[in-house]
Image (cartoon, rainbow, N blue to C red):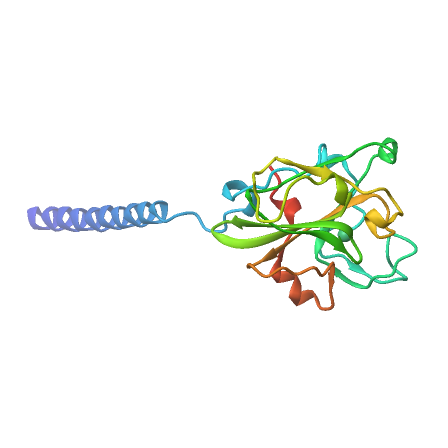
Length: 213
Ligand SMILES: [Zn+2]
């Protein structure tokens, strides 16, 4: 009888030990998991930000968002001369801004690379910056060239005033409606393209709207 009780005790103890060890292992696995950095961090949270190029940017209807495919037939803007995937984001004016000065500001800090008339944009500047430790160039299109006081190679800082939007349907905007086109191209090479012909090429560009502070 004593032997049987002893045997039962031994079995119970062994059983308990197995459960205990099993739980311990689970705990240490969970701790390990907790020590690993979380995966799939959303882009918006911890990433670097751009300053807003225009006041109340998020209230402005974007008729042509980044990446939209445009053709003369399908474009939300008529008449349309362009076709392809939009490399930039457009910020529209409010109805009462047609004849007002609409101030444009720099979105990042870096020197001015270009300031000139560009076909398709009218008054244009291109700025060099760094974003998340990579070189980028930022193009601001449809500006009134004579309002821009900054010179080539001059260092400008995020939030600095650049100038104002060009007058709609004039040479200042190269005949386009009054609005801001802003595009961000990866690398140091200036790329003036407002559209690319296949969607894969969009990976060379950054959608500023995702990153405005
Ligand atoms: Zn545009």
